[in-house]
View 1 (cartoon, rainbow, N blue to C red):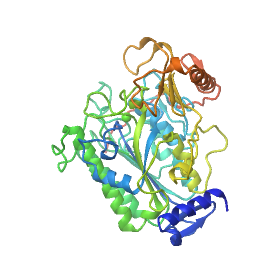
View 2 (view 1 turned 90 degrees about the horizontal axis):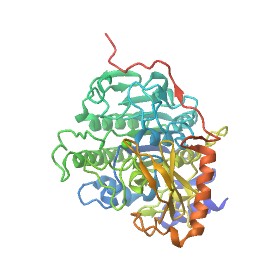
View 3 (view 1 turned 90 degrees about the vertical axis):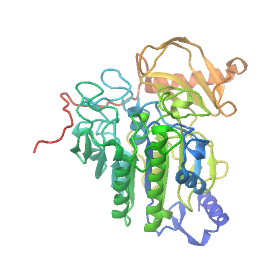
View 4 (view 1 turned 135 degrees about the horizontal axis):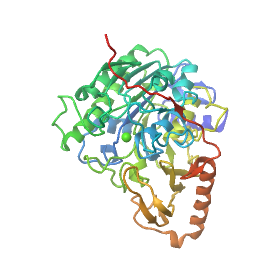
Length: 479
Ligand SMILES: [Ca+2]
């Protein structure tokens, strides 16, 4: 029996579940049958900010279901995505790698995300978390926004998902955005079933699809990836929620997502699979500056390498396995989910390539004294390395031209060092009093440049994205 197992037993005893605990190799879970693999549900919002949930301090939005989920599980307060925008962030969640590792940090025109009829997509040779789990007998579904390539070769159905229902890219990328865009397609598997998609009922329909998938697969292990279209602008909500919040359409969309989360948790309870299902709720990047979202108490917005762009509210729940009412402030990120889930399913991450994510089960299971497995975390904006965090320290690198996702960059940005534990809002530069820390973090940044690259510099260990020569629009098929 290893030390980890002893710790788990200790925890289970403290919550009175010791008798229900059943051993798996190296792990102990309450309520599981021997050999039963846990289910995984990832609820992934679009552009939801750090301060947008009641359990993360929002006074505007009513989120009782997510708040209860936090009460019954764990809040991760230093949980990161790898980019302030959609496509790169999602590439990391699926692969466990930095966007630059898999070349999904920008599109073929140098823009920060993929646009409709994109040549680029996540390389089919990359091994997604869905592919890892599918090999272990999991049923897999992606219900929601994909944004890792809109050509057939790049759709979720080609990346390990048995089932797909959703929009292939952002909800503002319909025909009105750029003249050549097709009407916003709603896709089932690989077929467009509605265009333009009726966005008012998207959250409702995603929820119905999710509950149906869970119900159908209640006796199997399953992975449900639920990347909501909301609250990305233009915000929409169904009639029951429209005009009901204290924060306009944005609040309506957030409150409908809270309802949706409640429906999913209720389904798990009803089906009796609550205690073998890990549910994780987070967002793909921070709130944007203009649509009503909040990143309080963080500074910065979506699309930046300030904490507000890349640190997300995160709640994880698994009764009996993840301690209830807990908070973990150790650094973790979306890249950690593929290796962690793989391990819990009795598999490993792919062994033939570099995976940047680490197993964070010691953090999630509340092991005493567990520390972040990351010596450093790197903040990239498209191809440019802009900041590095190690422990409580975050260093913004001095840049001759700090890139922005849109428009002109900012010239001559100075080096700044923040203690993001004591100064979460990045307000007080302490570089002058900690030259040793600055030196250490500059060296870590150079390690990242060597490995992953930087502007005008190729990294030694980058892998190619997928490319198609003549992409075609996703449109309703002719009868
Ligand atoms: Ca987003």
